[in-house]
Length: 224
Image (tube, rainbow, N blue to C red; front, side):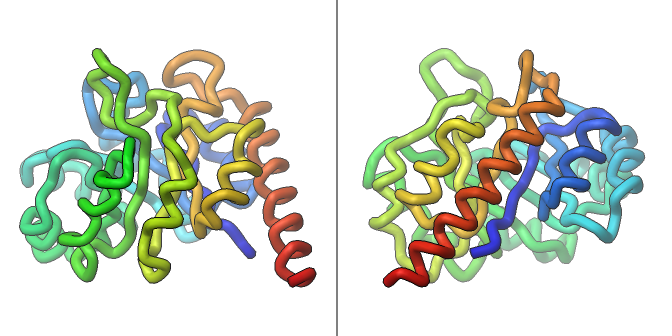
């Protein structure tokens, strides 16, 4: 199993280059002023141009209006728009129609009922990202370094394409893959030495853990 690996919240050339050189399938830039990973569209565009064509470029927004999306799309030319707020299925359809880009819809999970919220988006969103619900007091919809009960993912229809997010790091990645069989993973805060500061060593260790998990999954599959 070849995992899709998205490294999110990138802000420096060094972190972008490291993620892509190690085999990231996606890199994410966050456009949300309250986040320590927030970046200006022009800066994100400059970073993306270093690796364009080698990796999928994802613009992460939270309840962004069209004026905001206009600037992001113009400056970054993303491959995918990730909507990480309370956007409705109708808003997802509108964004896809206006910008002609695939949309990844993020949904927050704490219990089984939260997974039912995916249903109205099936056939509308191109992919999903499941993240943990933010802890009390957090103003960030993601990037909080917390995870959820991964066993809940077994309740999800197997046809739903998604990325698993929420507190993933080199130490818990193998367990997350084993429990969920997720086709894609997304990491951000678990790769940082401080909020918004990516640690190149942690990025490297994360990819080592991911490749090991891929090998172990392949071996387990052959043994069945």
